[in-house]
Image 1 (spheres, one colour):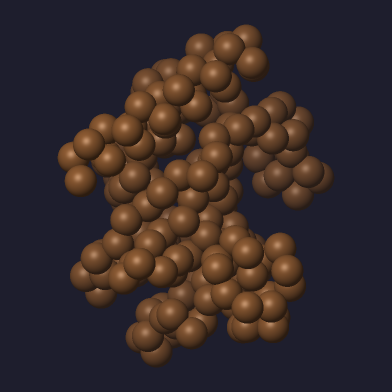
Image 2 (image 1 turned 90 degrees about the vertical axis):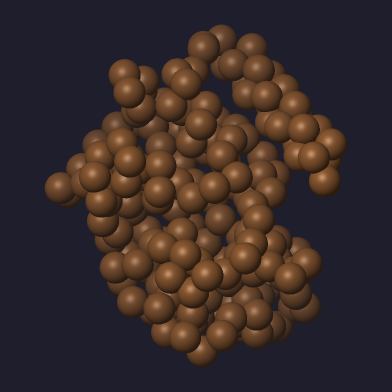
Length: 187
């Protein structure tokens, strides 16, 4: 297990190094931590800023198409909770995140809390003592769409990552988190 963890850490360092090389910019230690952590982003932001808040932009149940079914390893047609949020402190956006959660893998209590607009996923997992692990799939740069430009009041590139949260050897959630490349450079 320790060797697997060491290999995973090496791969994440390589991903960051490759991204820095291709983008032509070195990232801050805080940016690197936020992109590579296998822990909760919410917990890291809480340490940096005090308890952060969550604003839900959109949340709905939907039917998994081929692309979404593949992300969370379910069958097409299975029901998924789609959630789009901004983690913020005093109204200043910090992280934009989207998540896809297959409902068949959530307890009734977790599903209920997912529907509450004020609870980050990291806190939900902690509140229910869900033993899980995060596996980062990709770390990348993404151009902002019009919604991100409006939310963050910028058209600069975003640092992004997507990962899965695994519980009992099944994907419990797929999450994509993003923030402008100029964020978290001084902390």
